Amino acid sequence: MKLAGNGALGVWHCVEAGSEAEVERWYINEHYHDRVVIEGFLRARNYKNLTDEGSLYFSRYDTVSVDDLSCDAYLRSLRNPSAWSQTIFPRYHNTVRGAFAVSERWGVGIGGYLLSLRLDDGSNGISAKVQQELANNLHTLHGLDGVVSVESWIVNANTSTIKTKEQEIRGQQDQYPLAAVLVDLMNPDIAQRVVELLPALAELAKKDLMKLTYQLTKNELILPRPH
Image 1 (cartoon, rainbow, N blue to C red):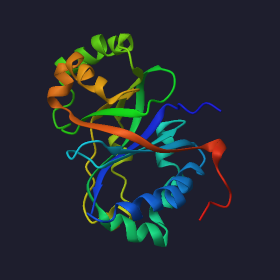
Image 2 (cartoon, helix red, strand yellow):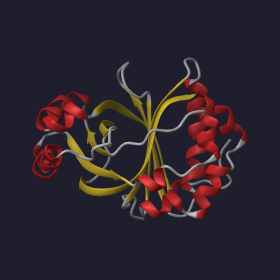
Image 3 (cartoon, helix red, strand yellow):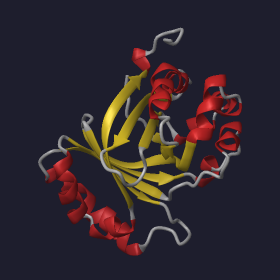
Image 4 (tube, one colour):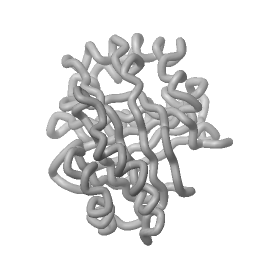
C-alpha cells in the first residue's frame, strides 16, 4: 500500500502541564487508530519537541487526497468525539491545525527526527521571496547528508475551517498555517544546516525540531482497537 498520499492533516499543539502521559496514552490507544481506520487515511505519526520552545506535539496524518479531510466519515468523527477525547481536547492549547495538499515531495523513507517550518501568517499570502526560495532551493536539501525526505504543504483554507464539535471542546478557534515544509532527518544536528539553506523561509517560519515517537499505518490496524 502506498502510504505517501497527496493530502495531509497537520496538528501542532501544546497541552496542560502534567497531562502529557494521559494525552500520549490516548494517542496510541484510541485516537490514531480511530483516524487511520477512516477510508482515505493512510498513516498517522506523532512527534514530540526536542526543545522547550514551540509546539510540544505535532501529529500528521497522511491521506490519499486533501478531499479525504472533508469526507462524511471524517466529519462524522469530528462531530462525535469519544468520551475519552472529550476529556483530552480541553487540555490542548496554542493549537495550529491545517488540512493540506502536498505540493512537492522528495526522498524515500522516514527519519527519526523532523524539522517543521510553518508559515502561520497567511494574511498576505506567501511572499515572492519565499516562493522563489521554495522553487529554487528546496531540492538542494537532498544533497545534504542525513536528510531523508522533504515535503512542501499548501493549506486548503475551506477544509481547515470547517466547524466541528472537537474544535468547540478545545475552547478556542484553531489557527491554521498557510504552508509548511517538513524535513525528515537522521540526526537533529542537521537541522541548523537546513535552516541556513532556506534563509527566507526560516526568517518567517515557526520552527519546531522534533523526534518521532509513534507511527500507525493502515496495514497495522487491529480491529477492534487495542485498550
